[in-house]
Image (cartoon, rainbow, N blue to C red):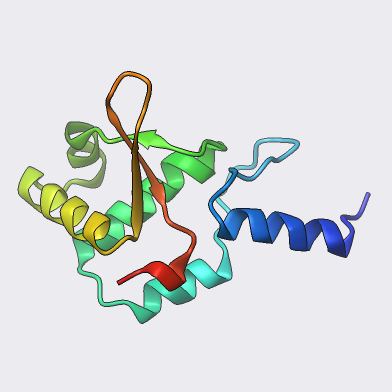
Length: 122
């Protein structure tokens, strides 16, 4: 059943506002990446660790249909093969530049997601 144009516009608007993770009827063996996100990443000067952290967060959130992922530096170090200092520097830079959004969960731990409002990136 095809998706109506109005529904597509509404989904895009919600995703750009970072309001909800994409809801899919079935798991897919790949992560869909929005064109405007790719374009925003290409326009900004990012080092390798920053790019890798963005992609890691994107995969761990929207790739698994979640809105947020807890900030777990040791896991990121293990899964990206970057050192702890590089991960910490990338995390600090991306949060200061508003590329990654942070909030505290109910257990006072940091959780993050890619900020889809790329117009607010610094």
